[in-house]
Length: 149
Image (cartoon, rainbow, N blue to C red; front, top):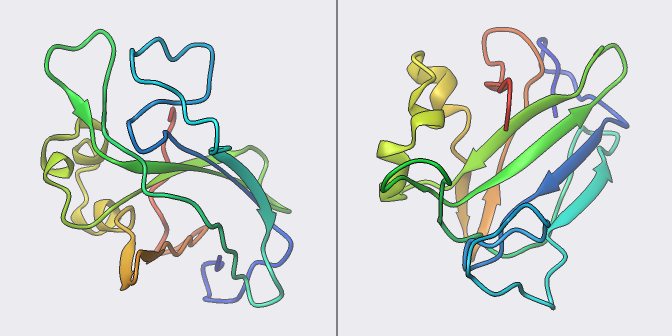
């Protein structure tokens, strides 16, 4: 995680949550018929290191239907919350996976009109199932943050 000047943000708390590979959240409000995954705790927290880095090891989540909307599937994504010194409220964003067809029709992702800001939500494929998601708190390269995730 970086600040607007490209300096590392140390000891920021990053929280992630996601659906399982079938698109099912481990949450009582998720009433989709998909089965839960008893081997996946799809939630985690970590503090950023001295260099601003953080790491989570997980699986790629599945797409899922958005309740209340006809034929709208959410693409695979991971939710992020950021808590940092000097930030007065929780910042919320999402990392989308590159090359997902559903990205092109996701109203949340495509609701961000600025193409560079939208691109800030696409993780970088490092190969081998690893993805990089850089979070920048302010400035020209700021990560797009969402009002509701």
